[in-house]
Amino acid sequence: MTQSTLGRKAKQQLIERFLGKKLATGAAVPGEASRVLMRTAVPESFTRFDRHPLYEKMLVPKAAADRLGLRNPFFIAHDGVAGAVTRIEGREYINFSSYNYLGLSGHPAISKAAKDAIDRYGTSASASRLVAGERPIQRELEETLAELYEVEDCVVFVSGHATNVFTIATLFGPKDLIIHDSLIHNSVLEGIRLAGSTRRSFPHNDTQALDAILAEIRGQFERALIVVEGHYSMDGDLPDLPALIDIKRRYGCFLMVDEAHSLGVIGATGKGIREHHGVAGKDVDIWMGTLSKTLAGCGGYIAGERALVELLKYNAPGFVYSVGIAPPLAAASLAALKIMQKEPERVARLHENAQRFLTLARAAGFDTGSSQGFAIVPIITGSSLKAAKLSNRLFERGINVQPIIYPAVEEKAARLRFFLSSLHTEGQIRQTIEVLKESA
Image (cartoon, rainbow, N blue to C red):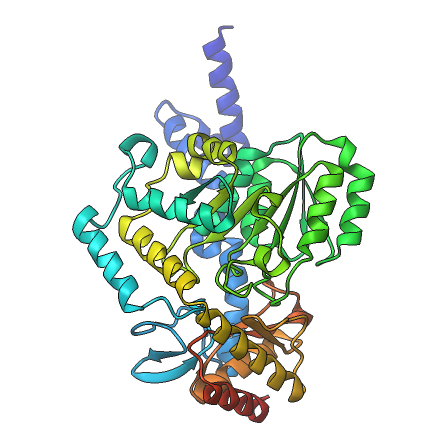
């Protein structure tokens, strides 16, 4: 019996098993039967996005919100620049849902810098910087960021999330350990998953627990990376950077600090957590940050020693195979960085506003968690339903603030998350606390 005969026989047996002998007989039927077999063997749920388990899971809270008459707080269209106030469907709201910490997005000088860059370079870099070359504005931004951190060099990516993902996945692999704060951002977790490294977490801001874990398992791995945030975006608190530096030195680890919410926010002049703690830039191996918050642009960056930056420029897929940062965005972020350094009073006003909000909220009896009052203050409600209802009530009263609900946080930690800015007035803050008290 030939191999082709065996193949035909096996195919006929499959057809008979699924469709019956009648369909499997006749010279013209097997081809059609095979197509029917394939359609029959694949469940319908595997061929439709509306049957995807993630989509079906999304529909559950939506249906519950519809039954309760709650407004969907997500993807609301804002008309104009979102600062201390924003305009939604023709109505002005006091706004606490923007990362425009120093009020630099929409600043005339920054908008002009972006427009000038469009006139000179166009709206896009149009290709990867590795294959198509540099624009001077891109390198000037990187060099200025490196100077800010007092390190050798910097590289800018087009996405903040992708910066963490591809930096971690490029530098580390299956023989390495990555240990992170339990409240670390999703982008770090995705980077670890792509790297294939062993992952461990330690309780939030518990450096003693970190020390104990490393004492037990550090010797089992080649490279080891500790990852923390410079200012935690859900809770508004800071890590103990000097203790982390000590631990990474004792155990031979790299230390990575995500400054997405700390640049422009932490430190007397906004230089971040290293300014707050008075440590040298080179004491941290990998400085990461984003351009979309304080710096009024879009993208992310890695700053550190030159070897680190060169390694990423030639190997990180999110840089090598991605278009370079758009010139107008690079120009906007560079202009914002210069204004931040020139006008430290913006940082002082931000701190004053955040401390005022935190003090008044606590005095009113609200649970603000571990916030230290630099820019982020949560009002913890204890349930997703309560958070959604409170957000709706505030919106009706002219205050825009987003609920953070399960699974973004644990159900018992559901909250409203208030982002303060240097543009908020004392009157707006006091008004918001009063409305909170009346609406809770």
